Image 1 (cartoon, rainbow, N blue to C red):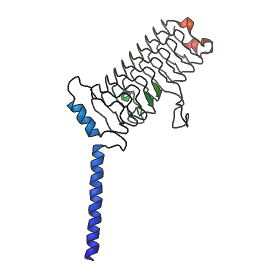
Image 2 (spheres, rainbow, N blue to C red):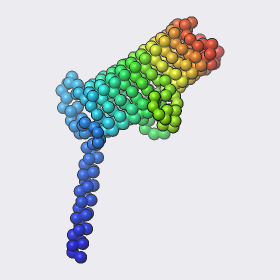
Image 3 (cartoon, rainbow, N blue to C red):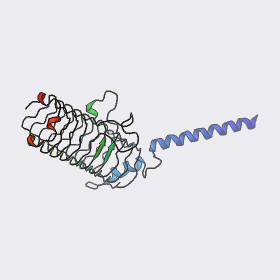
Image 4 (spheres, rainbow, N blue to C red):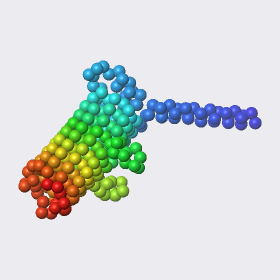
Length: 277
């Protein structure tokens, strides 16, 4: 009887030890494949001297909870940021070029002035609840988004003055299962602010841009084929050589648009007669 009681006590002790270890691991936020723990990253950022840019370039930071951190313009080029939680994080001016931000949580993330050249943002989490509040959307103002590839609902995002030359917002990600419930059939960019942005040769095929602002944007050679441009404000934008085949211009503002006589596919555009000129 005594032996049985002792065995039971030993089992309980082992369970409690395992639970404590699990709690400690959760506190450390250890990802099985990540090169650092959250504590290590936080410490490096905290100890960085003024002007010093912590270098995480080319490292694996997958699935870590890095919400609320100030990255102090850290180097994250070619870093694997799959599934990382950046809720409320400050990534202003950071070098995130050619990084993988797929499945990342970008709720209220500030990426102003960041270098995201060649990065991918496939299926991120942008909103904190099912209400899809545009206040949750990330900020990319002044960022370098040249050649970025996106598969997302980024409605409400701020792209003012950003460089989106050759940015790819075309509808489908090149992978099995595209167009299913897992992968959106089109990018949704409602009420985004692209004022003053450089969108030369950007591909917005089939994108939903309803109510977005393109005021003064450079859309030279951009592809807007089959895009929903309803109520989009193009005032003063440059559309030289843009392709609008099948695009819906219902209520769009085309006042002061430059290069409109060179736009391709106008004869196949929809509701052009309902646009404001």
